[in-house]
Amino acid sequence: MDPTSRTETTQRYLTDASHISMDVIGMAGFGHAFNAFDIRPGERTMATETMFMLRNFSAFMAMPPFLRKLPFGWIARMKSATEYFTSSVENIITERQKLVQSGKNVSRDILSLLLDAAPQEGAEYAPLTSKELYSNCLVMLLAGHDTTASTITFTCYHLAANKHVQKIAQQLVDKVLGNRDPEYSDFEKLEYIEWIIRETLRLSPVVVGIPRTNQNDFEWKGTVIPKGSMVFTMFYAHTDPEYFDDPYTFKPDRWDGLELKHRFAYTPFGYGSRSCIGKKFAMIESVIALAMMLQRYDISIDADYGTMEIDAVVTSKPKKDLYVTFTPRKKL
Ligand code: HEM
Image (cartoon, rainbow, N blue to C red; front, side, top):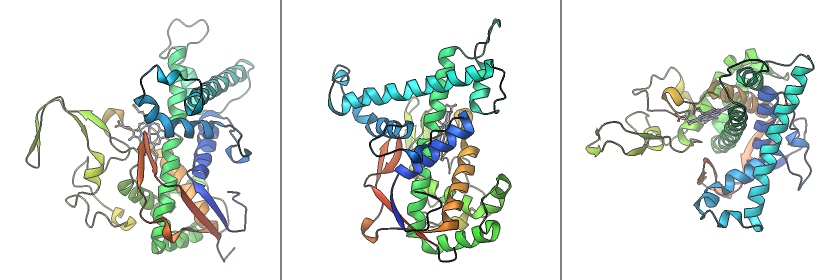
């Protein structure tokens, strides 16, 4: 979607949302312009290859290893998508290393922090090995891209289904931004949009379950979960009426001053020492992206779409393609 367009446009989501999040993590985290919106049909980019890998990951992993080596069809495409992705990450690291060696000023971003921890010439010890540097870059790009794309997509769905919420959000955006572009300092003023995203992640969590192994026998609502079991908590707690009133209704207002009755009642970003390190980044990105959309467009989906069903492949995605229509707002 061209953000300056003043004509109605219908876009297949995740694709656009995936381009937004790939461009943002590329520029903000790695100083690299993926220019995901500029690709021509059929062209390969980090965004297209990642989407392909993630969509087919479960089916691929379910295959016996010898079948994963078949040189044709989607299996061969899976291999070439992985190669494309890994070589792109290697190129980004090499480009940055060359820039640093040439003495040029580089931005302080995720990549520069990781490079600081990687082996340096002449130094005896580094916190990360070269392989760990590469793996961490890969994880950051994957975790920072796909999750946010689904979050923006699911938010569009909920906004289309809850026009009164959309109206309130647009009024806030008009008041805070008017016609100008948002700045970092606007984030706090756009709190209602943050509530919309929190509510989206409550009803449509992007990471569908966080596995944990319990260290001791545990009794929950009359059921004993024996020590050593793997438990997935998220879905149930998010819609448990004990923790959220009217749990299946999309109500961003519930977040106004809400104090959770249990610290694990709401965990879209996980919990404990391995919880998401990109939570704040993702929130800012999603709030700003949504604010810019709402500033310019009314968001709707086809009335026949029905209730969104979820396909949980690594992260969750709409099972049936979701086409979102952006209609320029009258005031512009
Ligand atoms: C709305 C978007 C996002 C959601 C819903 C999300 C959710 C999660 C969840 C549920 C986990 C597992 C936590 C656990 O096991 O307790 C996780 C881990 C992680 N996330 Fe995110 N995430 C998002 C965006 C991001 C972004 C933007 C980045 C990077 C810039 C990121 C980087 C990571 C990393 C590196 C981990 C692994 C942390 C570890 O194992 O110590 N995530 N995320």
